[in-house]
Image 1 (spheres, rainbow, N blue to C red):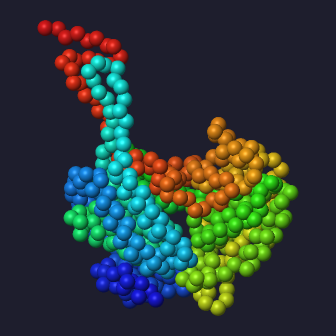
Image 2: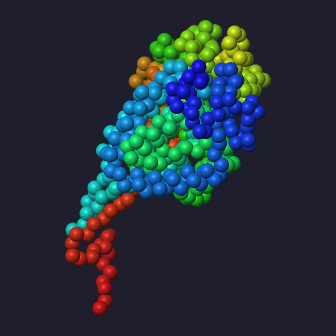
Length: 514
């Protein structure tokens, strides 16, 4: 299966791919193993970049940017359109590679590639809408306006859980803005990155545009540190943990570069007593177990009114007991594996902490075992929080399918609980009350403190048309839709004097002497 997929995507003959790697290959030996988390066995090896190859890539990126920035934006849009079309042709094999390499179920893997196709479509339209404002000047015979200009080569650092789409959010928008991308993917998903970038660069090159999409696959000491310190990359867009974001943000800030950070989330759903519980169940279930809890938007905390908590929790426990765990490429599977053994250990540690702190394990709590479950599988888990409401582990983001259930009496109490974590990514409320919904979405900013807020929807599944990102320790970045494109450009305010005299602003007169 894996060899067939690599062949379909042209990776079987790629110079960087080692089809039969030695079992003890490590980054120190110059090859990283891509493992199938459903089996724990290698798919293939990938040759890593070094400091020397990084420098060569950056030289090509700089030259590519100088050429690409001169291409009219609507023409750049046509290149992105062609990339989107090529991704459509490779939708299923590329989506299946995502599933194979990171353990997403097949539908989610294909859905992720579809998301990149959608953002390419969005970017095509955007290529004719990079608008600047015109504003009146206070001086006669003067005109003022602003224009948006290409920023430069942009550094993109992505995490394993979205090995295709997060690159797409950045690279497609950056491309129509006139930027070249330099992508450092997670070492847990190098094959998806190779296949994705190869498609984009092949299309761009065939249309006469070399070195628009560059890729560096390497360790943090060898490549990552070089990227974040590199003044040739005016913007670093980094997706990952809050810990990683603090390092990246600090380094880039010291060189006065721009940083776009998409970091962790500890997302909550509030369920009001008047909520449609069937609707709430569906939103909670997907949000909590989708991608085996390895989304930054995963539902990790459930805050339910005391009058309906038992009814809703009982329904969720029954569903968790029936969930199909297994091979992510099997259409019957709903929950695939965690990414590696370290993730399993972190899951078990969190469950242990929950028990120690007084939490009640209602379902799950251990490794998932059975026929065909030889990889990194765990049981989706629900933990009932003590009546005191205190469970410190629930304030930590564990990248695994653990759902902590809290109860509340008043909506103000629920909103305070929702906001009482370091991260501020995604949030949701289920209610049929306009008052409750508007209180949650308060225009005074006293409702949800997250970058994403949903009413009668779960915390996962953002559309590409809206800006995606969060507040607090989530980093404050915004990617994908709306006016996120402005982060990939530099603004220039232009003033033109078409008169014959020199006039100063604010009515200042500064007479010249002869």
